[in-house]
Image: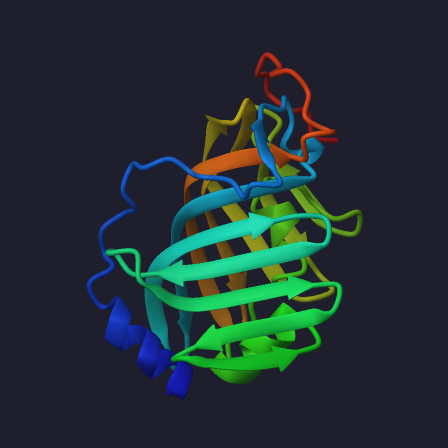
Length: 213
């Protein structure tokens, strides 16, 4: 078991409860907006829960994720809001803050796997977590025309969608599972908010189900 996981488990063993119902507060340079399709959100943030299971580890924690065109902020927190891990990435590279120390790497995915041994698909997740697929993904739709199964053959990941919800005017996943020969990830999204810069923000739109082709 890695030092990363030992530290995380020590702080996260009481995290079986879901996040509280408090709302998301976006960064000052971004405004909350409504979109009729998650693909139209160039930036977003979410709150939820994530569980990661590998041959060596089994960890469950709360997750906050801020996604933008040129930056990422992934924060794991305890039930009381204490930050367990902070992973950021921008055009200069990635940085991970853990146990009062900072680590740098070329990418967030490379840095996280090096310290934890978790092969999380952080490059692809922004699409999958909002119900979108890559051009080379194999896609199976449900009766409502939303993704039910995505297979990313290049990396070996399978993404299964258990339920959907309307958030910020768009249909986004509520619960999904990511399967890989080396790990299994479960994500529950409690809140998802589309964001835009003040100059890009548009009036709120009427929600409708996105089409996937």
